[in-house]
Image (tube, rainbow, N blue to C red; front, side):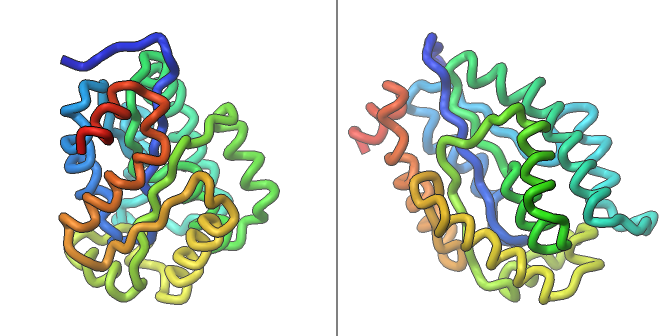
Length: 224
């Protein structure tokens, strides 16, 4: 049974370039954390709300092909994110849950900011407005070479793989690494190019950095 608490929960995000394995890691990491007794909420962006799923189709579907500016993408992602925070993330944190989220505001800064050239100061203000200033407690960056990640995505092509070149994805990867260098207290870099089990264990170990904030996680980490 999940343990409820009056304390604020933990907000953990998974970030990384395309094909880094965030979506496959998410349920496995949740299962790794579940024995501690915390409520674990898994969620993703864009999506996870009825409005967000509609916006997800606009943002990621390759057909029909509709040109998007970087600014338009940024605003669509922000709209989905605002609903996501209001409807899913904030209520879960208020219950004391551990929220594991596949992508969050850093993805917009990497893809629309550095990738597409939307001015970063303006984009950061949009993110603050969309999220109400909610920041992750921990961000696990799954990093791997762009060519490796794109080859993994060959059976799941979105607009960002279909219509952007390798140089765009290189800028995105460099952006994530620069964010991690700028915020070493929040970010942990995990090598995502290797074995899935190794990635899982490295991500679980990264959570030890914040586990003492919730007794159910702290006990799990100590037991491990």
